[in-house]
Image (cartoon, rainbow, N blue to C red; front, side, top):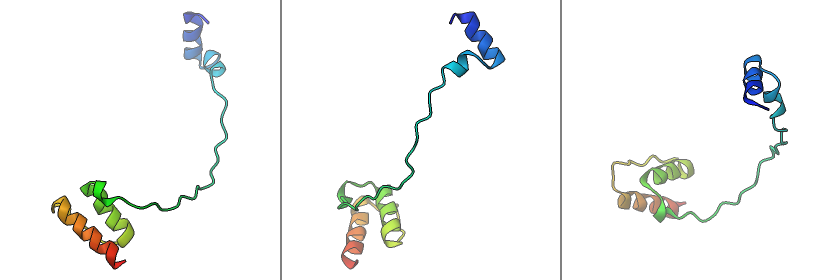
Length: 81
């Protein structure tokens, strides 16, 4: 199509825009089962350590502490589990 037909279709809202629509792809909404893997807490950031402790142990860590102290707290929680 030339530029005038494209602009005409854009203003009118039909024609070119309808012809360029892609067909819809069906989406599988079934959940995927993922096995829990071994967690590497050493490579986590302070925010990730805090989120991990909150999700796994229902414990809030204080991010104002340094990473070494947070790692020790998480290790202690893992041993107690």
